[in-house]
Length: 113
Image (tube, rainbow, N blue to C red):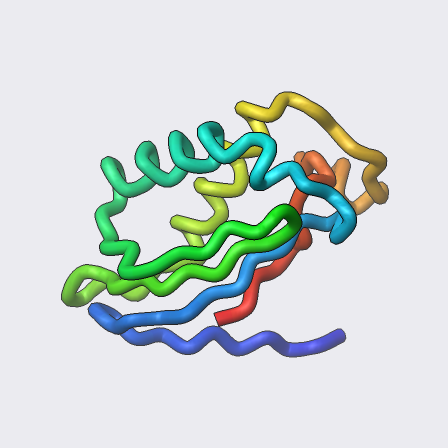
């Protein structure tokens, strides 16, 4: 099994790529307001600055700057993905592992920074 290592840079600026599981989907652009609402909710609770973002139908790119002393972008992405999935309200075909973790099957599990 791969050993994913995250770059921890408290207060740093990080570039991300986040994908939908179905790369032929246009869910992100079709439900852009739900995505925006999820971002706003997480930013209100766990502040960060979104310096730039490009939303494409099946994936997005973002550049964030985290607060001084805070390097926890993983929790932020987890909450953004969960909020969006809940707003969309659909569950796609899932593996047993995805079901056990309560995943909806909308997102690819990981993101790239």
